[in-house]
Length: 255
Image (cartoon, rainbow, N blue to C red; front, side, top):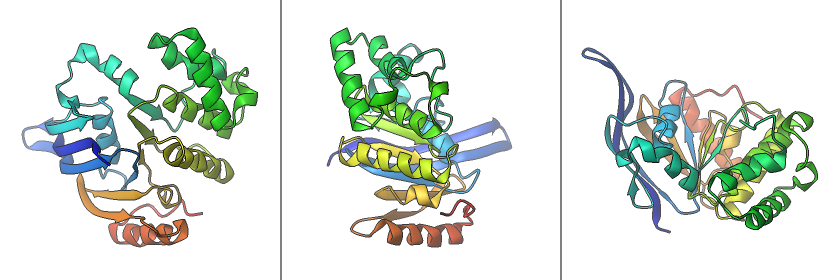
């Protein structure tokens, strides 16, 4: 698999003069097509800042980020929104669904903005809703469905436009244990069955165990890496716990 995302020596500093905080301190790594990577670390380790830089929400202080050959750090401000719409899918902890639109309309919104023909919009929404098991709720509003259904709807919205990269920021943070597992199964199927490339930030070892590879951040740097390979998810989960114990990571969300 070719490298879809290339992170080259990026740094992100906040402050001025002697009062500088190094949120990201020289990070480099590649993400191949159809990979599912987890980013872990204690609070303040730089994982959210890293995601924000990759997603173009924040600018790097130094270094380069390439997505399918395009240098994200060189995109002009006026072109950023269009770049995000065409290339990135987002799954947020708080869903970010619009309450005034039906589930169908929420999923279709990105396609409509990108001027996809109406018939193709219907076909794509119908196909992704079937794949993610939310056909029955398409005509309902977000406040009429469960948290798990909202999150699967958010997954559908994230992938319906065939983005090159899906970014998930603590996607299970607002869900109970059962809904979290359903969502993680959905994200995993997005990767294995639909071929989505996924980068997920999480502090939860259970969530991270669904990934194929995990990068652990500490003080703005990559401190270690785990690759699942042929291990069972339970074996991988235990390895994650061992690394977090050394790093001082948050082990409070263990299922």
